[in-house]
Image (spheres, rainbow, N blue to C red):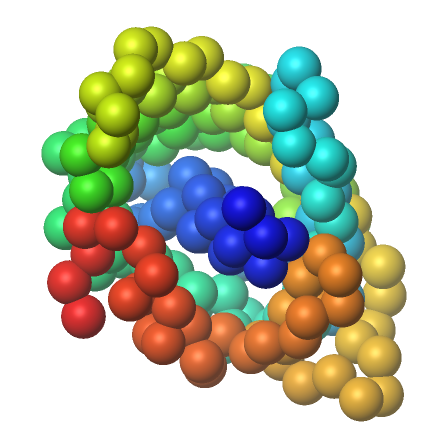
Length: 182
């Protein structure tokens, strides 16, 4: 699997796992502070290398990301739930991406002005080879770095390896995610 496909996969997981369909949730996550955010994704067991992305955002961009993820999540997820807790938020989802079933639980702590952490436990079953069950853990550590760089505009995402894209181009990526209708 190429770095680009890994990055796209991580981004899809990030979008659907951490920011999917606010419409289906009992509560809404706060909008992140405008500016440049660094998102470091760490998977347990060293299965994939640590990946770091940077995302230039503003309130409209965060809402657009949610609007992008919402229809996809509605198509592929039979359960989406988020609840406010004493320490942050808890999210539970059940999704099917092209025959691969994923059940996820995420704990979200911190604030959306300076730093937050998303700790996700997922159980994956199915797939092309009909392989068994695979449990994975991933942590997303997000921190606000300050204002976006002069050459960035809200929506710009710098992926691992330096690939740059904008949220306004995300609809083009739907074709790369199994089980998602265009």
